[in-house]
Image (cartoon, rainbow, N blue to C red; front, side):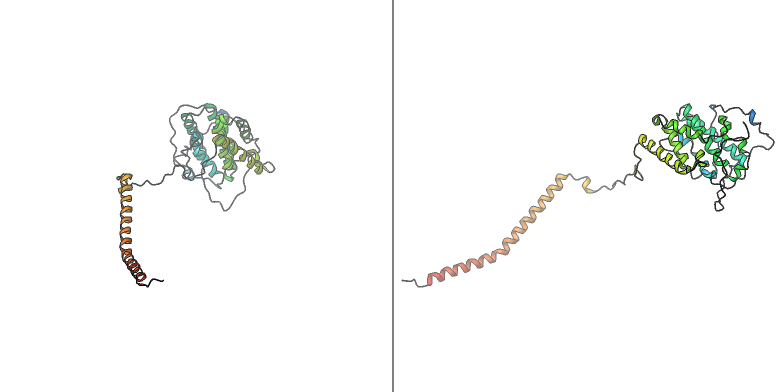
Length: 306
């Protein structure tokens, strides 16, 4: 592998003095100083092996990043690499670039193993690994500390795929896979996440590249949604209210008993009101009867007209 990198998609980003983000290496990741790395030309292409799971301590940059559940097992397997990409591209310094390189090398192998154990097809795993190596190399080489390091002489893409740069091939893969979304939906979702996290590739040096990249990302979103369907708009789709666990009296009394009691109360109320009304109107009836009797007597006492 040549030291020179013909890919023009990688440039150093301007330094933002206000950003204090630092990508820290993981403990125990420093290689022994007395071991010399073999020349790049002697490196053998990476051959996936059913090795034991690689134990890799979590770095500080990924403590708050978790995608351990979801529809896409490919994205779940790549969670750590995606988190490192997101944090690395914004960092200003790194105390040990060689240690970071070794850690990412191990983590890519771990991703390879997790994806295969999750039932992902071989060709899908290889394509996804190519994409992840591409974005990680760009994230490092576009930082001030990465551009001044020897990373360009031994990129992740060169180790695993024997290529120097993938800034253009990344989008060539996207153009090919988007024609058959049903067969490649996992990889398309992985690409969408990479673009959302800030990967630019060849569009970094193209006129109005950000606008084109935004349009490409929107188109990819609609392709994914047309296959996956409308996304869940509820904040918590599986939410359920707290059930009423109190044992109330109504839970043990049949409804017909409640209805009978209600009818009985209404009947008693009606009877009581009827009795009260009769008692109240009795004196008035008596007075009316007396007035009527007096009127009749008065009429009888009047002299009859001849």
